[in-house]
Length: 127
Ligand SMILES: C[S@@+](CC[C@H](N)C(=O)[O-])C[C@H]1O[C@@H](n2cnc3c(N)ncnc32)[C@H](O)[C@@H]1O
Image (cartoon, rainbow, N blue to C red; front, side, top):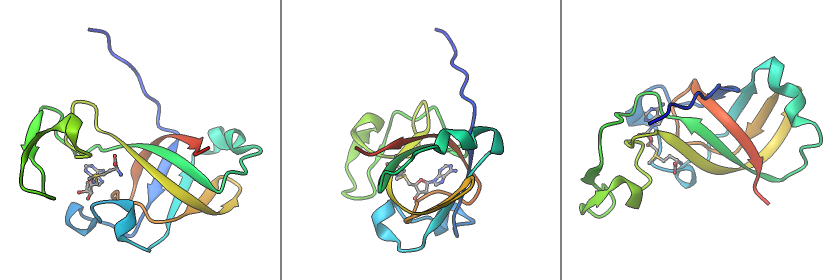
């Protein structure tokens, strides 16, 4: 099996300081979040006009050895690939957010469900 190296391109700033504070998904909060792109990646925002973007981020506090767990929504045992649980072999999170403002290397976006300081892996226009 080969390894893959991912390089974080920035950090996500949210009001959530503990896992218990985090909403279960992006629709459960109205608090905005800030994306801080590391300066060396700021040119990657050139001509970004999308009203919505997909963010890929890294759940550093998630266990990577879980393949099944009880789904909190319906209390059913499910495989991790049947859920959006943060506990998975590669704890990559995905969310579609609205872009509210872009200033230099900082984007203000609609609510996110991750801890303050979570590492950002990628940004793509939603459409
Ligand atoms: C259910 S996941 C959904 C994530 C993403 N929107 C997705 O669909 O891939 C959201 C939960 O991940 C957990 N979480 C947030 N930040 C985390 C981090 N840095 N490491 C591990 N777990 C985290 C919180 O418990 C939060 O409620």
